[in-house]
Length: 139
Length: 180
Image 1 (spheres, rainbow over the protein chains, first blue to last red):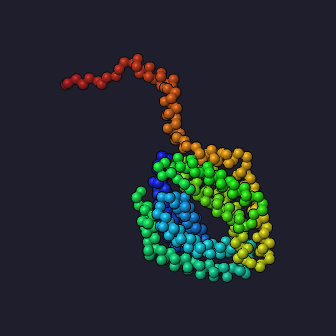
Image 2 (cartoon, chains in turn cyan, blue):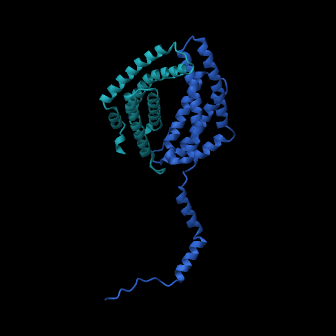
Image 3 (cartoon, each protein chain N blue to C red):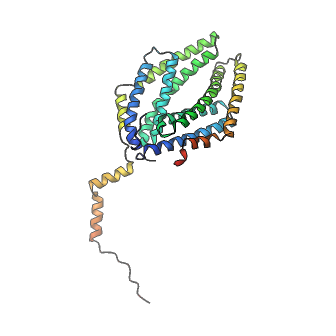
């Protein structure tokens, strides 16, 4: 891709790349949903989502809407995990132990919800489906 | 963002991105006026992320000069992220005065850091510099630029001397191979 590339080809290439990276982060977080993996996954969601927002003109609007709705759902579950992670990190920093068990319990519950979501997504081969829906194969 | 499908990526970026920079600076000035709630600062944090991710999408066409400019944005995003984290933690640990005091102290420190970083980012002439950078066509690679300069100047003195020497020296011929 050069600066002279038509904007449509460039958009498709960039979004394709972002989807590949996002799918990688999903599988990584599914294997080990630790704080870093969840954080990286959320960054991946935001980047991919921003790619779709910026280049929305070049993709089928209905598909973009569908994908963004799914992304929002994953963002919601992972934000619950992330909130507990930052709280647990803060409690460890100030050496406070009283509230820890509650947040650990809550985190484990949201982690199960996340794992179930990823299992359903993977069973449907979400990245291949989205790629087809967004017509990303043409590059 | 309104793209022109018939134009190249750089032609589009040169038109769209300076306006985006202007919008971002406007939002930043509002966020840094000292009257904003944690929610409003969080909204500006999201705006910073969007601005940065959009610029990163076009980084390959602008090259290293844009990459270097993204560093202060990362710094701003990091401070705003910490501020948001403290706000979330305070909500999670509702009604614990000892922890709340620690959080308030840390929030105050980060808020000061945010203002310092923003005023450095938005110092005199910065918006103009950003707009100029984003409206500029990409530079040619240094090797290509060097060869173009050389072609414009004509041959260098050393090259001229070498050419003269070559012209005056007897022509090299392939050795005769005499038949045995």
